[in-house]
Length: 328
Image 1 (cartoon, rainbow, N blue to C red):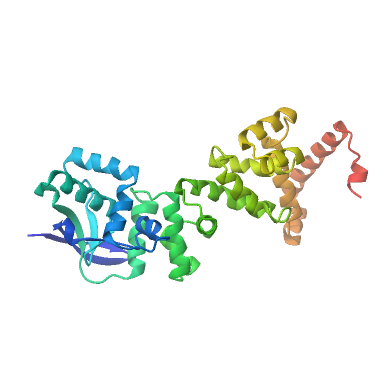
Image 2 (cartoon, rainbow, N blue to C red):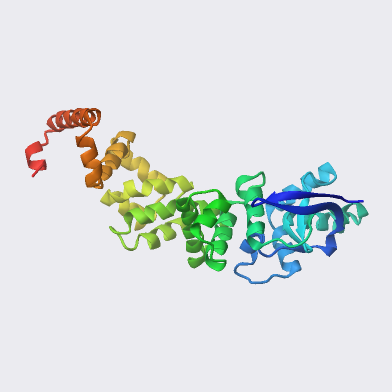
């Protein structure tokens, strides 16, 4: 007899049972982000198409070999009304193992079956716990796809989305923006998602200086000018140098090499100190009147400002900068 128990979702006890189910009596869940990211463009939700797409992934073959080596699953798949909410890749592996060996050992798969009805929000909470917070991580593209669906198709409020995902609004917005940009620009190489994640803050920083910065960055990403996604963080530094900017965007050179050459010419460019100075300058420019008044009324804070001013004055003299003219 199956063992009945429960799982807790959003403060609610959901009854479940554990049993083995025939792999051909189960269906892939089209709204699981891994599946949704596969069918998003083709709109083909057929079992055959999804199975073929999953089987074409290297990680599916890696998982199939692990399941084969262990002789079964370590973690059960989660099923609701015949659909595999969580574990679609494992179902794919079992089907291919059965087709390969024609052994009844692979004909049934271990399942945690949810009994009764659950809401879409409870399903999303389950998926978030498994894949955002939990042990089986989606790749960043799949996370972006899932959060975009929840926000734009299911109309989640930001506070609801933050609660389910367990991340800040800024983090979620960046992932959504990156996913939407990839779709808009017809970039199908999902491994490039991390590049688009890094591109979002760069675009926000430079778009007032160059309205075409998004087009230029996408072109550079497509042209493989960034060997690592983190190289995009160097773009604002290169943008500030006319020659480097031309080499990157007009001549199509590799970002890493352009950055190395700029640092060789100007070693002080993009040092921790200069980044700190730039950040402090922006913070000072954006200080509110209330913040300024609070410093004026705090002796310890005033002493910090005096010390900073003293060092700045000293540096200006060494650099032969006329402080009087700078303050006009």
